[in-house]
Each structure stands twice: as C-alpha cells, then as structure tokens.
Length: 157
Image (cartoon, rainbow, N blue to C red):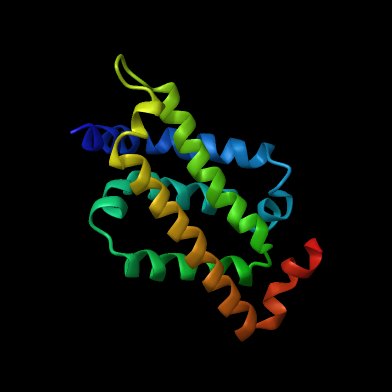
C-alpha cells in the first residue's frame, strides 16, 4: 500500500508541487526561451494537472492515453516556438521536482532509496519516459506539418 500512500501524498500536494516547479523553471538556465514562449500560468496549470491526477496516469491510463496527451503537448510547444531540448528539459524538471518533494516529505522507514525496491520508481519513470518520447513525436510531426512553427529549434543551434 506504499504506492497508494505515495500517490495520495503527491496528489494532495499538487498545488505546492506546481508552484515549486514554476520557481525551478524560472531559475533554470536551460529554459530561457521556454519561459518567454509559454505563459507561466499555462506551465503551472499543466504541471498541476500532472501531479493532481498522477494516480490516474500511473494506474488507469494506457500508453495510448499518454501518447495522445503528450503528442498534443509536443505539437503545442512546437507551434509556440519552444526548442525541443527545452520541452524535454521541462518534463525532466517536472520529474526531478517530484523526487525532491518525496525526499523532503519522507517519513520514518521511508526514504527515496526505498522506492527503488518498489514498483513505484519504475512506474513513475515509465510514465515520464513515455511523456518525453511522445512529446518529441508530437513536436516533430508539428514541425513537419508547419515548418515555420519550429523556429525555436533553429534558434538553439
């Protein structure tokens, strides 16, 4: 039942997690153009939804659901002119933010290292790895369909 307890903890603190992610994003040197092209409220709302509904994403949603959602995210970021590397960094930062939270919120007998012995680590990594992959696919498809939308890619080179 540690899995359900962790999911509940994350979902209950989704607002705090979203605010922390926004602060981390603002401090990141890898998201400079991302933050100028994606409104902060939009970024905050998207990560809030991930954290708030993490249980659904991990336990009920299929790979097809993740593909549909993150292909749309990738396409949207491409149309906004965000560099693919910054899109990927934002997703990685979302995962790192979650691990930092779990490390901070540990209770006696629970440390992040304990997660490695449980399916939770694998499940969370699986979700975020798929999110990155499908976001990149959506981005690439949008760049092909709308070549002018991928200006952010050329700007990073």
